[in-house]
Image (cartoon, rainbow, N blue to C red; front, side):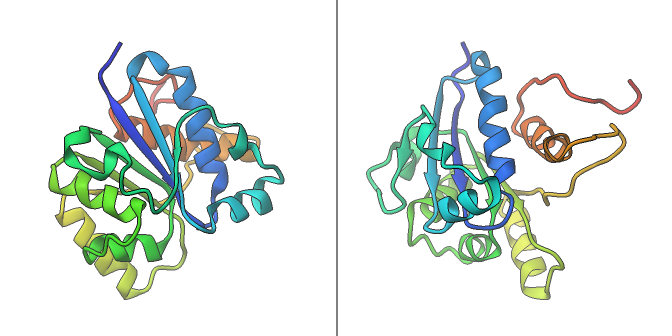
Length: 187
């Protein structure tokens, strides 16, 4: 088993399907990681219920930490979580991270991941971008984070909403350094 430790942060941006699919797909490659922790922002569960029409977040079997739990193991670099995926990532969350404001567990964990030079992937879900968004994305990128817009691809000919969303999630899993079976260009 791998010694990988992952944080998934779910914010109130539109795109709960991405978080839902990511959790499902990570279950399938459980041999590639050994610890998974989840944190929701205030609005994330409301958006999940609205968009997905369920409360399956209550059925998640992985540890879920409260947004103000600064005793969470990933609130410190000594917890050695190596990857954080914020999916979907609201522009407000991105802006707070870009400006070093760690007022909750999501922004604190992102700050820790960046300062420890580990992998931060922000799956932003907004359109269009204003200049503030672009500058914040630049700052995150310069700090070592990866900004991955939730922009689906279509060359795999997806036919359902889930398949379209999976093109984003599979890209995120690739960026996180995991091996997954997915459509590859040229195959």
